[in-house]
Image (cartoon, rainbow, N blue to C red):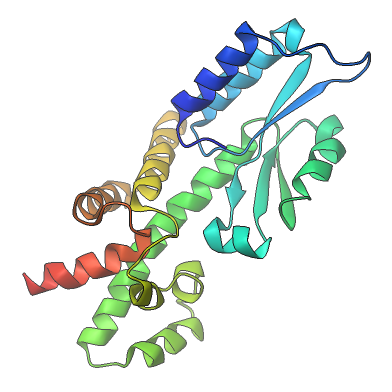
Length: 234
């Protein structure tokens, strides 16, 4: 798992230039990439592996969902883009690290699922921050408001698991960084442009995360809540 598309490309180019030692007859290498990168880079890497006979391998995409909380609890979900014949083999490896393995389709489909999910996460995180800030400004107790939302139709991962009023207690340290959320949002926007999908909230969300990153650096992305509060006081 690597942070950027360029890192994945560089690693696999190095591997093709200096292939590892040969495997026993009949054994094929399996390369599982859990990075969140753009689909085109992932598919290009899969072709590179397939077109390098010395590797004798197959590349599949298996980005993860669940974040730091899921990793600590062993409940990560893997979103798998993989040919059907390899499913059992890939699942046997991923089951050692996560509790859910969702086969999304052929190579690239795992990343398609991840980018769609993380686009929604980017938007819902801002929505929860706005709603919590609004309720508090209207005089509600933060715990009462959190319980109201999580007992009602507004409930989502950002309100229940990663609520900003909880993260505020630890100074928004750790978790999923603002820079990573901004990166994933950018990847989703690129995928939308390539596929012709309309994203009406993307540009504003990107503007928010850019400003939050400049002000808060590597804090958990729920720090949008703090940014909203401070912006309202200015």
